[in-house]
Length: 285
Image (cartoon, rainbow, N blue to C red; front, side, top):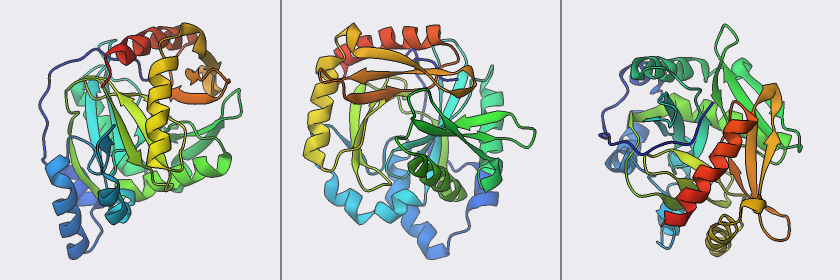
């Protein structure tokens, strides 16, 4: 499971993932050309996302179809020293995250396993957390979990999320080390058509995801709320997921959930994650 990360320096590659290209690029030549022009120049950062406070809505509206049908893998190293990867849609939205791997080579093998298995609907298993939230896991042929989604409010939304992964993984345009930089919020228009933001740590890992908002302005207000409430330990709550996993939520003063974390292998790791996120929020841009 994903753990909060330390920043590590690493390069960014714009090269195409060799096995993914051979197996997954099934679009027409024209569509591939459009995707390349739209995405390769930002292969290490959200292609259509905009940093909080920057105007990127017009670009997102023009390329929403590309965002829903293309993606990239990014790798990073966790605080525990293990290697992880996540799958991002063309708009920068994280739609799948990996388990931990002991080496970079094994994480890369995990990327290839996801690229192979994610196209099959039968490899997805839907899960329900203790609070009724939904998510899904991706399994290999031997039943091992090789990927896990974000949390969803409904079963229908989780099912749509699994379908989005199936579509995006068929057209991987890049694979490489996550972009290094300052801890920051990124706001984007999701595949659902609503607005979201997430908190990205300085090594590229996405550590907190927002709820859905109907407008960019509302999402921007949500960022402010997360910054304010995230400084208060009592506003965080650890919750149980399925299969012994745990995660945490951040609540506003009225009790509304305004942020959800990654999955953690234990409740104690989730608690440690809260401490780490509070620190990240104090310096987030």
